[in-house]
Length: 417
Image (tube, rainbow, N blue to C red; front, top):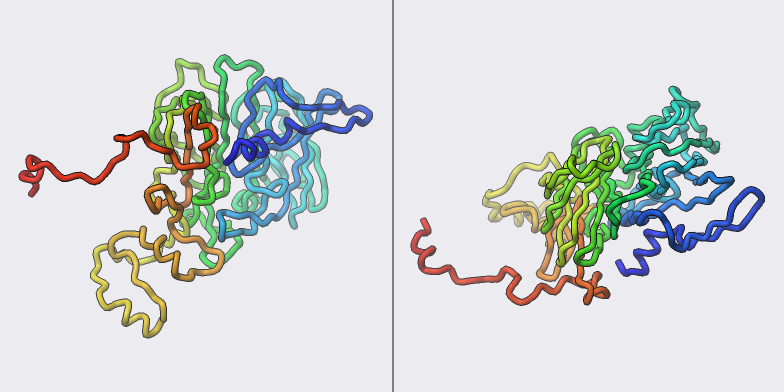
């Protein structure tokens, strides 16, 4: 992602100039914000205007066409044309007003997950409000009396509506922060059941999901995170899905600095290389960036993969000699797979036609060949100050710092069983 692209994704409201109307202040946000604006990779930030001192937002919940990665598009439900919906950012103490327009074929409500507010603004259909009927608009208004990484999502038939993508971040910055954050990212972890050859996620699936996403994208369609060496980076993770996701960052030790309850005091923070985000939780991590191209992924083994099938017999180590020829008499073009592993699925995808609107299990090319990953996987690309224009290129490792083929010394060869 180029610096220009990152600016367009991260700061859409910094260049937002609002036309003055009675009772509306003119806001030209070109700098001077009391926080580092959040970047939502593959996402956006929700613009706002200020009306009589109140920050005013507009959400539209609707059916959307959403690309998981090039070659696969699904019919999802989201906010303002995307899933996750655009990130809402505000500051502790702000008064906010959110208009929600429903373009779904059924009623809905928006729950402000983790926010402290009046119960009538909590957004639970039937409990704290009437449902927002198709075509109707409701208004939510409250004062932000906390800070932290929070979320918003449907709370009307939420199994279906969240299962189809109706979620987003609501990030409340503290009025003052002792430590400056240079890069601030927000990532939703989620899982989907989009059966091969289909385009509509199946909200009835409880456990056997076949796609796992960062911000509703799968690798190689996930945007990389970028930074400069020595910068302090915060990554905020949110989860309103079904499963727990242990997210691992290569090459760094980070500190868990925040939960959905807000920032943790320094004495309560702890070091990790993997942070687990359970359903309904958010977790914030911070670290100082180190040069290189680093993997960021869920560490459940089948989550960094696409189009998983769970009813396939285990043929690992099975001699399939002659099997292809016999099956090809019934199914021309058949190729036996899985005898030595799953990576060959990605290799076959280059010359075999799979089901419509379905991705191979693995994909993505790196500087040394196929990466052999999919799903909940992306890259953290960190460059030195002298390489500021090379963040879209592969990292050039210094000489002598890349693993390479070698002759095994006689000492070790003689001790091999």
